Figure 1 (cartoon, rainbow, N blue to C red):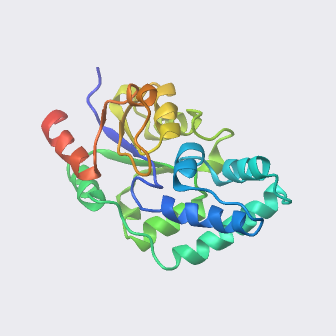
Figure 2 (figure 1 turned 90 degrees about the vertical axis):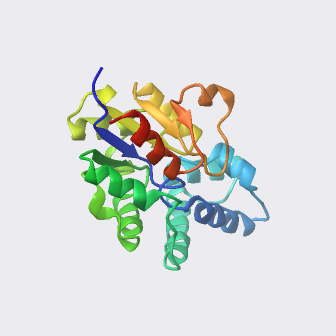
Length: 220
């Protein structure tokens, strides 16, 4: 078995508190047509998935008079305005990234987001400098829970599967990592994973600070 040498991070809901922003965007889109979406429904059906996939689902689930292109454009425009107000790092993010860099881990991002959006979020929080590689939604044909994004991220790292650990907050991300044959730790954001997803993880922790403690105690 290979020594753990790389950590692959999700972005939204894991490194930054951005899922609440996405929820607000979808609520505003639906409000125009007299519909509502709760946090629970968002967490169950939309969290961890790409914007394109979510807009497609919104249009179909609520029979919205929009094309996918129009929906994506509205979503990105609304989100951009909200992001300008700032999006905070999740607890323990900076400490974990500093530890990983100091101790020679490879650090990768695997996000369903667009490159422009993801890099903007990382840069405004001054954490883009910690990453050795990036994989974005436009580089894959299928989004999470398909494993393609993690397989591509691992290929870029040029490391064996068992040398990589994925950190995820959503069930879609857990399933994707598991299907890619990678170990995954879950740090739930909006929703605690259901038992069948929880069984796929190496552990479930309250914050990235707990992951730091785990790595200090188990992997070096």
